[in-house]
Length: 114
Image (cartoon, rainbow, N blue to C red; front, top):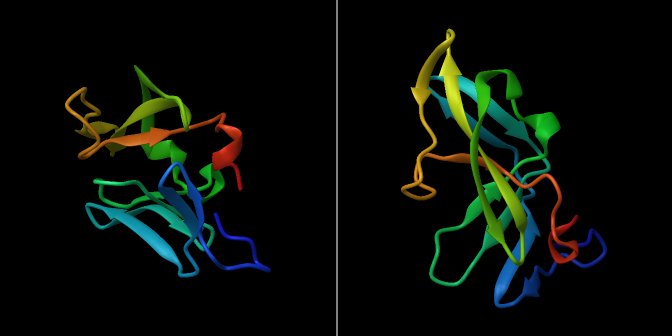
């Protein structure tokens, strides 16, 4: 995570967290799902970077929470969501992995709080 006074990313167990200084938008089917200037990038060894968004910057009305949850010792409990468009399911959260999933960590481990 970066501190405005110290822009160097902080390493957590070989992972780094930093605030993305750019405006980051997520589009799905041409529609905005998230739009933020406060997105956080998590970089973990041997994984693609992942952007996390404050819930206030996500269009939660197009997301439906599923029963699926996973637990990470570092990040806490993740809840998963499906994407709906015009009241129709367009992207289902699966147990196959993070590809195509939307997830949320409501209560982050202290090392991952910003």
